[in-house]
Length: 127
Figure 1 (spheres, helix red, strand yellow):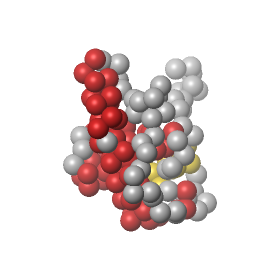
Figure 2 (figure 1 turned 90 degrees about the horizontal axis):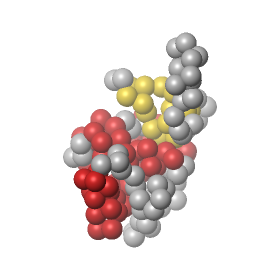
Figure 3 (figure 1 turned 120 degrees about the vertical axis):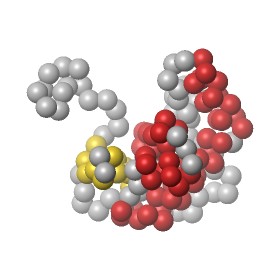
């Protein structure tokens, strides 16, 4: 992995933001953290943590514990880094959580593409 620049520019793939749930408070939180540097700091710290964990990878629970983030923030930072290609989400799980790895540590493991599933994985019905 290339070294990360000291001034990490945050990934903001959702209309210039890191994303929010749709409520006014969620949008305000995202815009505030995107502009004050918190989003970039969390993204950079997550990538550094993923590098340290190597092929073991990281889950939202790992990120939550390591960075002291609640579920939504930990999951959100992983989703953005997955969407933007910095992390891969494996088909494997650990403790009922999806595992994310840096491309360098992917090896021959199967990954999941970013985005919502169009059909039920169990019955094949439309969602």
